Image 1 (cartoon, rainbow, N blue to C red):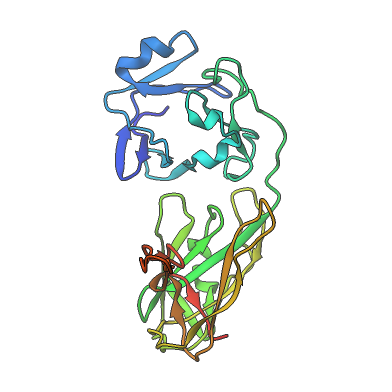
Image 2 (image 1 turned 90 degrees about the vertical axis):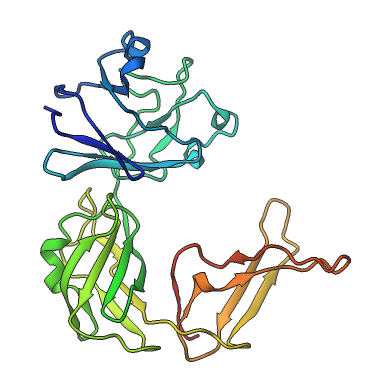
Length: 293
C-alpha cells in the first residue's frame, strides 16, 4: 500500500493517492488530468498536484508514510549519452534495476522506437551491477564543532555507527542526514576545531552503500579555513594549447600554511586588446578545503 507515501520533488511534497503496487508491477505516476493519456500503457496513479520535471535535472525522492527514504534519483540530462535524444521526446531509463542507487552509468536514453517504455520493462535493461563505492568525496567544517561529510552515493545505517566515527581525537556526539538521498551528513563533534589545523576523519567498519559495497576512500583530511593573502594561492600549471578534442586546464597550489576554501576563490581572464575582464568563475561550486601544499 502506498497510502501516506509521498514524492519529494525539490523542496515540495506530493502525496500518493490510495493505491497498491504488486511485486514486479509498474505504476505510471502523473497528474490526475493526464491519467487517460497514460492508461493505455498500464496502471496509473493520478496526483492532484504533480511536480514539473525540469529539463536540466531535479531531485526526486520517494518516502513511505513513516518518512523513511525508499528510493531517489537526482537525474541529469547528461545521463542521456545521446546529443540528439537529449533535445527532447525521449525518456531516461534505468539499465539495471537491481542496482537502484547506482546512478552514473546506470541510466541512458530509451532505445524504444516510441521514445519510452511506460508500463513495461525498460528498453535498455541489462546487467550492470553496482560493485564499487568511492566513499567520502568531501569533508568541510560547518563551524568549529560540526562538519559536513559528503559521499559519492547514498549510505546506509550511518546513524548507528556514528559513535565509532573519529576526527583525530574527536568523537561524534550526533549525526543527521543533510540531504534526502542520504549522501550528505552533518556530524557534531565533542570538541572545538582549531583554525588552520589539518584533521583526518575516518569511518569505522560497517559503513556501506545500499549495494553493500565498502568505501574505497574511508579517510579524508580537512580543517577550518582562513582567507588567503596575495601570493598564497598561486597558478602552477597551464594547458592553453591542448591536442584536438582535449580540454584546457589551470592548476593552482596552496603555498601557505593556511587551509583555504576553494569556493571563495575565483578565476577571471582579461582580453589584452579590449582590457575587458571576464565574469569570475568560482574554483569550486561547493565548500572544499585546499590544504597547505
